[in-house]
Image (cartoon, rainbow over all chains, first blue to last red; front, side, top):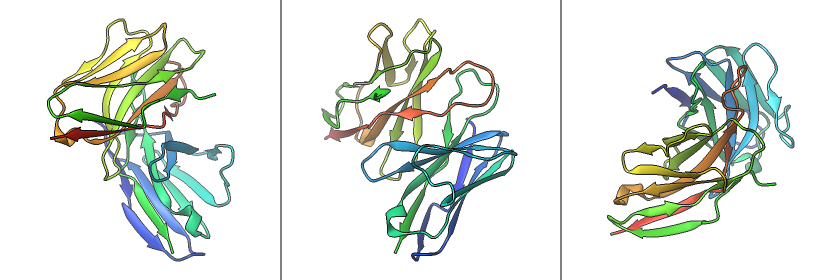
Amino acid sequence: GAVVSQHPSWVICKSGTSVKIECRSLDFQATTMFWYRQFPKQSLMLMATSNEGSKATYEQGVEKDKFLINHASLTLSTLTVTSAHPEDSSFYICSASPPGERNTEAFFGQGTRLTVV
Amino acid sequence: AQKITQTQPGMFVQEKEAVTLDCTYDTSDQSYGLFWYKQPSSGEMIFLIYQGSYDEQNATEGRYSLNFQKARKSANLVISASQLGDSAMYFCAMKERAFSSGSARQLTFGSGTQLTVLP
């Protein structure tokens, strides 16, 4: 199946700093990627839709100035958590689907566990 | 309103037995896709099985089968011959307007079921 790679798999940062998370589709081009957030023992909640060449679409309640998304190429989307706070500590995971596939299966990155201290 | 409902926060099953994980969904779309993912403690999302709304037969993938009852809007996952390695969180998810052209659609997830396989 298709491969989506996410980096880093875990990161610890200090409050007030920024953290960048990368999501790459390795063997297909993705005009759209999705970013999810997951708190412990909870479900995945969609944060934003990353669109290549245009602005991301954020879900209600997600601060676009805090969670900056850049989709500069057809294989790379980045999520930057700016001025991180301990409450931003969470598991962040991206997904993408190869174009033209009727079953539109979503392939996920490995996820990034962010801890803000 | 919840689009995907998983009513079993936790389930236990004896090794080698079969187990059914429940999932109901709500949508007004005619074309949609239903997915099951497994999430072990490492966090990765492992795709298990897919059912399209127009598929007439229930999907099967090895030990996984999906009991799709369209009129009841349910898409239960059946795992046969459970193994210790099946212990994980299981998520049911839906993609609406799955077959329409245009940009990809996001998945909406249920709250998950934590499955524990007992030796």
